[in-house]
Length: 424
Image 1 (cartoon, rainbow, N blue to C red):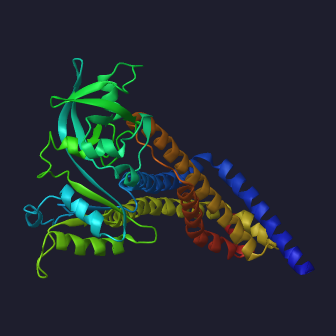
Image 2 (cartoon, rainbow, N blue to C red):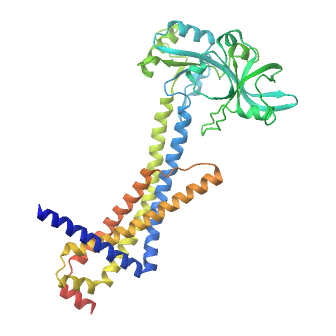
Image 3 (cartoon, one colour):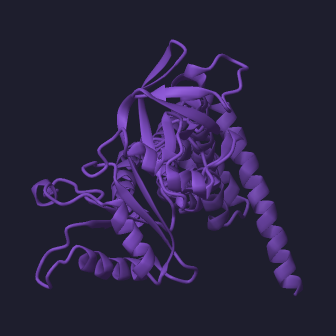
């Protein structure tokens, strides 16, 4: 037990002395230290900046995708995704989802919790008292919409079931539309707006969201009852048509999709050999594509940053060789006084690791400053996560060990007599 305690104390003392020698060596040769730091700083800055940008893009995109619903299936004409081999001609002549199909799904589906139908069109102007907001999206919904799609209202209320069923000319406005049609401080609730010549009473205003990275936002949308929107938009042939379905608790999306496939094929009277003439989309389709996309981006970032770190590592190794050469006499004296090989090895390894850690910390500081500048200049927040900080420092330490090992090993193997004579 005493031997173990003595060994621990010896190691702690050795590390402290090694840190002391490393700090002295680095402060004595300030210019050389700065130039050595530069290579590692640039390398860590490059690789962690790429990682942080990729992580930030991934977070923003995944947050945007999550707004579509983590557990929602969309029956639509077009499939999501596609890519380079997207066979658009196969889907062009497919029929559009219809509200009566949503009604049949409600009657036949045993695994669904809520089913809503949505339809609408974009590029429509909204007017009020001489004010106009163009390019809005008008969406007609059924009552279950708010049970599937999560949203917050800044003021007002949601539709009642009777208002939806009879197609009352009521609407909920996006915040951008409310700001464009009403003066500051004016309460939109109870006021009327005009869309394609039809008057609508405002019963609610959505909370401001801002546009997501995939362009999804309610700020420029007007939500109305489906039976109203079909009086101003041809909902029988509309790419915006979709049936939204959420599963019951304990039912997976895949189980729900299997059931919906059978019901939709029955509803559309498809024969056993016929291809499906509808698409069942869910956010996991996008998530799988994102996984492969960000894996490639992460690999590219690793390769780019890896070359920078490699160059920095060679610079550190070169500086350590020079340091060993300059301190040959000191090494000889240490060993003549009884210093073991591992003591000299640890001294030079510590110097190399400390040098790389300082460079890594400087690189992380530059990433943080760059993230702050990007947030102020481009309104894009770059997240420097603790994971990336640890990766940066870990890479710095590893490069210090790898780059400094051979020079440290050579220093530890020097013969004390030859070392003193060589320096003299």
